[in-house]
Length: 278
Ligand code: DGL
Image (cartoon, rainbow, N blue to C red; front, side, top):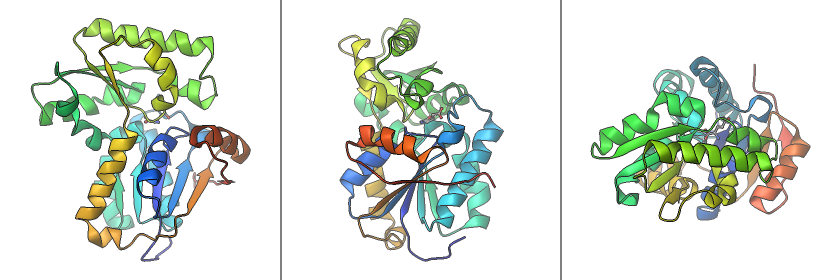
């Protein structure tokens, strides 16, 4: 592992979804260096077991540490729900005690009381994020008066990863899962997009969400929370290099990633194919 005392911020997701977080972080703090890693070859993670998500996420974190990253953001709710705690508590102290790994669930949960008037929140996520009950438990702990209803949307990530955003299949599955969650609790006034891939489907999601219900997209809030974290942790901030560069790594096809990411980020990028499963 690189032993540099300074390096970039790493941003990890199973595939393209984390680009919705990267984009907001980079816009807010363009001065830092970033390395984005998408494990596209093994996405989606959302239907995989705890052990597998943990193993894959740890491999990704090690890869980003090898690349010199001092701070890694798991820009993936599934990995944040399944692997973050173990990585922070079991692996990091041995692997790199001075580096940090942060997730996307906590910065989202912290805002729930502020965003909902009815205090009825719906969380849309992958099957694994919803079955982990991470959002429900964390929101309940922080805001016991809020009612939380989860809905697994297992087809939404494959729609994104396979570039099927605008297909009739996207309409079918998006409407189906939204109808399901709103039938479970008609008082929901805020739907959390609890998967970083979902903002990429936001135009379609909006078509099927009744007026009066807000969609909560995490990117901007995770970016604000990271900025705040760096202010509160000057020791970490001083370990981050500041040349304004961004590199993109994928375990899948570099060409495909580059084409897809260009659409999401609205500018062309260079992508390098890497292996992380060793
Ligand atoms: N984008 C990820 C999330 O936020 C995971 C999607 C997946 O690989 O299933 O949950």
